[in-house]
Length: 67
Image 1 (tube, rainbow, N blue to C red):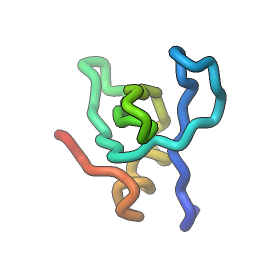
Image 2: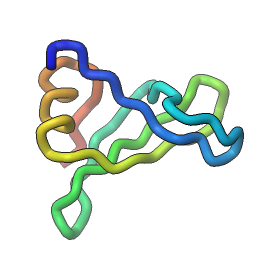
Image 3: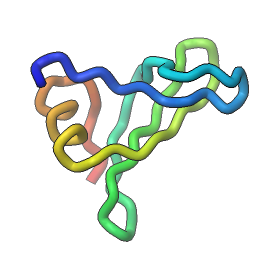
Image 4: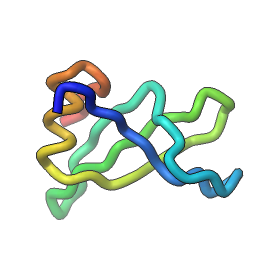
């Protein structure tokens, strides 16, 4: 998993697989991992990922850790 790619569904434009820019990974109260960022056009994106993908994205430098 050297090339980790974080994508989300854009609710505003109804596009699937939109790459998340300026990604920040947060841990929810129940222990899930949530990725928040934007699409580069001013639209906010949020998605849930599993622990493996979240930690791989942080390790690869694709996202920042917020806990």
